[in-house]
Image (cartoon, rainbow, N blue to C red; front, side, top):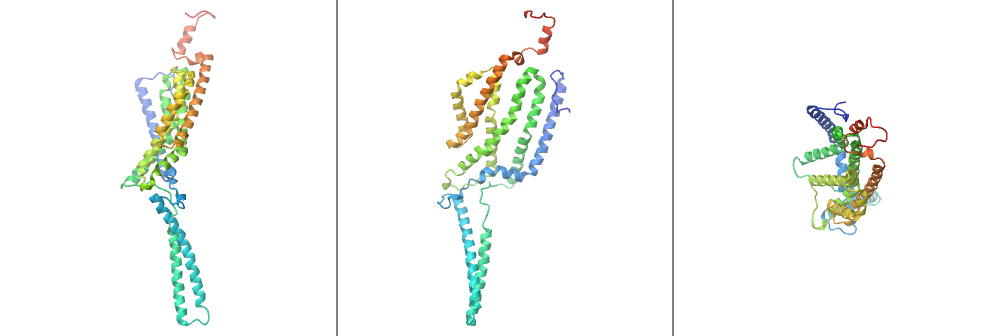
Length: 358
């Protein structure tokens, strides 16, 4: 299918044909993004629920018994206590109503007293119903939610989040189209170098996004939302929260591209794996600096959590680079980046077996 399958290295296309191929692939990318965006916008409630996950658990209501200084947490604790009081008061008023009704039915009670007791029983019944209604009206959802300030902000924010989710969903297809477009420029040997790197990019990026969302982002949001919270009414605007989350996850995805960078520089001969291994300390120091910048919290635990997978990825990539270097030594023809292999084969035609190269 045009615009989907890669063009062979041996095929020769004119400039116009290359531009036509580029246009076709861009159209396929746009169509894929539109389909993914339609799906994400249809499921925007679920997507927003997922993205708001790290924010919901930042309100620590377990500190109610200890006495929190956060104004919002104090309001939530008051609601909890009010609900418990209303529940207890409803049960108490219901008991008073039952007692008063039984007293009114006793023999020997004067008519005036019986009427007064009946009125008190009815009042206790109304108080019991009001207390039960108040207990049921206490907010059950005490998790933090981002707030919107503008008239169009709910719609624009939902639209933006759906767009980023669609881009993440269609990313493997976009990278494949980019790879298929540049593939004809590579010789078979060069293709064996580029293919593993191109396949690693989306996998590592998605792994970095998953690590950031499930591990690093919740800790960063929890720390930032509770930092000096006794001095502020911390209300988080939806637009700012989603922008921070998207940038944070994108940085995590890019940081997980360390193996791609290491394999690229080693397979291109810029640096050897042994050199990277000897200078491991400097690399780990650089990773620590990058992790400290990428995780905007002075919390050392969060920085160490962000550092751990990067160090592991670096060590694995160096190990993989050394394996490829050994293969390069054993199979030098597979790593030839000079003249075309077909030209080499043509030069060898007619040469006697064992004859020296000219």
